Length: 427
Image (cartoon, rainbow, N blue to C red; front, side):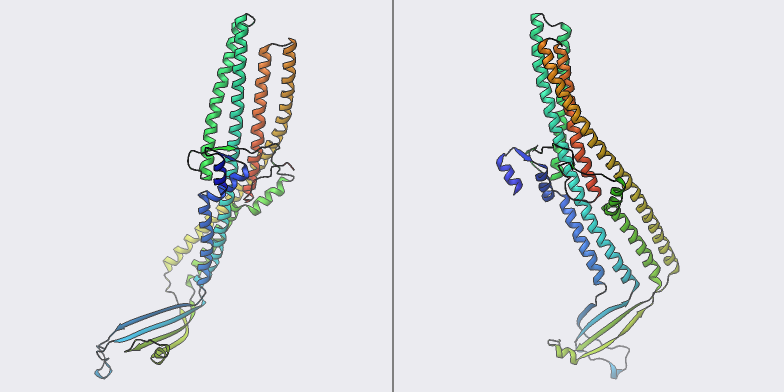
């Protein structure tokens, strides 16, 4: 309904804040199907392990006859056809394969549940990052367009001065170069904007020719407090879904190794069986009860030990366990490196925001002074244009730093497994 309402306002342009982009993406992205599949697999895997412990019921019904060849004449069955049936109930008492399978299914269930959380958090991170890149590209395109307008106006002024003889040929050529460079910068900015729009629409699964217009206003850097990097690294290690999945894979490999070792142990089960045989089909329960033979007891199954296969299976499972353990350690080191890089990147982006804001204020003040100096005849028009170019560069730097602070904060949130956007207000 949100997307429909937004499209009613403008059939060709979709104005979106970051929150609206997240709501649309979380509802209709193709990743949501993967998230639901992982959640379903988590439940079904756990159910499969639990049902192996429950009693199993099997039954059969047949219709036929036996001539009893090989038996004495007095014991041979008659040629008449008869109905036969069987009902068997088995209950596991001790079975290493069932017990290790249950343990494995519990860990697998947790693995798929964590995988769903990881995919959800990754989707939020992708939507946030792609939206902010689109916003940044749009702001830089607008700045490049404004710079081209100023360059065009300045070129008109200098041409008039050149016509009147108050500007040299070199000054005219210099401003033509300024305009040419501004056109190139605008072309690059428009290309970057088009690419960012395609990437964002693919992430949130937006089809058609609708143009996306990001309307988020970022006035302050992302409000993610990094007071103690060591504590944050420890929190990421505790909550990161990818690291948890690697640890669970290692646990599953250990369980599989234990399962392969326990294959030499016998399995014990309790059973109850009823075997029916009569010339009539058992249409009512008492008819079955009058013509069946009931047996029950405990059955122990001793596996036939194939030593070569048994040993090779243990060797394979042990190798898988070692690989899984190494992968878990590698994942921990990778997560630590990525987290530290994200924390340093966020701190750098936030500090850059502060420097860029001060630099932007200085350039704006310098621009006001330069215009006043030009009015008084203290500087040339070329000097003013140089100040304007520096102001445009300061604005672009401020825009990049502001958006980058949100992107870095979003990455930290993703590493924490958090399926939400970074805070907008500085803390």
